[in-house]
Image 1: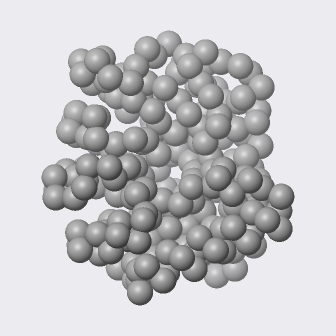
Image 2: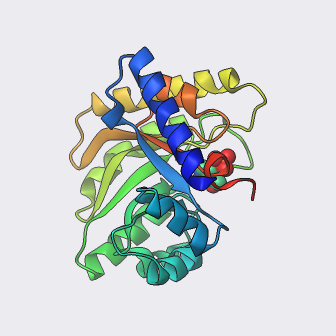
Length: 226
Ligand SMILES: *Cc1c(COP(=O)(O)O)cnc(C)c1O
């Protein structure tokens, strides 16, 4: 099933890209494997998939040890400052940089480990009280501060859109995140590039691709309900 799910989603991605004149190599599928056992991840791996997303540090560590080393791990969940050090050299990209405090903690740990950390700024576009992330105003007010960091490199933006019955309802959210990335890019701030846009999940990834997603994070449609 996992293999078939992946191939169906990959075809869908290609179809949307063709229709919207987007280069399909621009859009990367992150298989969100949180709570799923290693054997399920291996099924995806054997089908050729290499990019996986997790939201808990301990789970990344367990799976990192047990699974092939050419897997690219993405941290997509809220990160506690005291746990950064455990995954700093294991994840390709932190999608969930959601506060100035976390940024300075990542910088400190990255300096200690003498390694660059690539991260996306998580934006709470819809201003939901239950969600982590910068509001758009907060981010615009603070964005210049990221240029001071030597080890933390900002690569783009990420959002978790509201849970909706009709994905069209999230189109405005995705448009806003894209526009924000264009606005930030136009400031040409040192250390900040805006090439990555992480948005879209099982329920709304086709719309997210149409609006410029470069990473989509899909769990349920690949691995089934959690
Ligand atoms: C769980 C999760 C996903 C995947 O959600 P699905 O609806 O199962 O595709 C994507 N992004 C984040 C941040 C998540 O926590």
